[in-house]
Length: 240
Figure 1 (cartoon, rainbow, N blue to C red):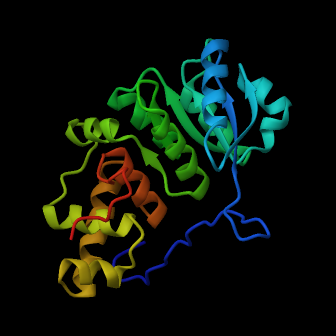
Figure 2 (tube, helix red, strand yellow):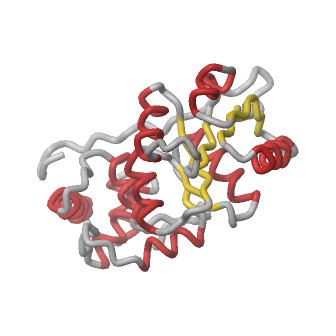
């Protein structure tokens, strides 16, 4: 979007609901080449309401050959021992129409950013709690994205070379807008004119573009905010 162009709001994806009005369960396929870890994770997730583990696999090839091909969410271990490139694997799954949540023993800022930039909707570390994994699955299914709180803090405090320097006002506008608010609502929360809020978002887009990171759509801005730890993973309201 260029300055002065009309704002286009991206629709918020909604998951299917069963006939009785209750939210449908999220179907999950888990991929990990450590059998004990895989079985333990699947068993734990099956105890949680609203999550249905329909397949487990030790490789992406096995996943795609079975019922996991139709899962709402692929919970993917990045440390598969098949020599594959994690970003390439994520992109492969996304190109096939699958939503990916990453579950990894390696969770340094560079690894997290690479996974999110490849298209993963969520990232949790194997040291995180089961509730974090469940939240990552649910947020991946509904399209809102998730990074566990400890990882979000790491990203927020990491001085990546391609992280643009945003002013406090630009940061707040980005947080509010990426969290789903309309431009008018962003302006209201910040106590400024709608045109001023739009100028802040346009500046944010330009700074990310100048840093070589696409931020043309609202979804792009959400992903950039996630990569830089600017979105509260707890789901709390953005700052007023």
